[in-house]
Amino acid sequence: MNVINLDAVRLQHRKECSNRIVLRMAQALLNTYSVSPLLDLAAVLGYEQSLTNQEALTRYIKEQMRMVDEPLASAVFNIMCDRFQYMLSRLPSHQHGGL
Image 1: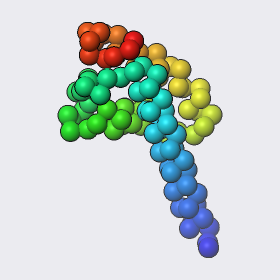
Image 2: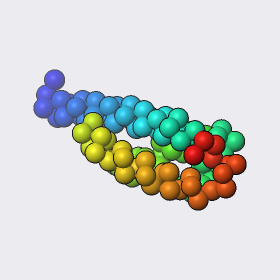
Image 3: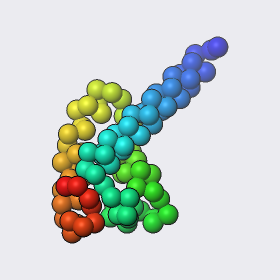
Image 4: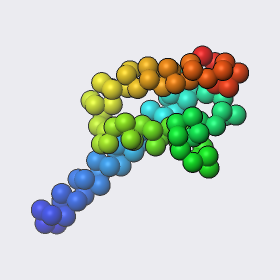
């Protein structure tokens, strides 16, 4: 394996790790804030309505943090939780679930 391929493999591995972290973060936010499955979170976040809540939240997280690694995710997660909670708190209580 030459240096160019090694760099590509490392980048691919980093992307896969980032995607796993983002999925865990999205699931944690959905569970923590008891987001109702009936809420069209995609519309709230400004995405096409064909996305599931987890897909919409995953896209939101990826847009907020382009390349995520564990230390960065830990540092930014609390801020993202606050922003997401603020967005949910602006909705009527019957729409978001357990806040």
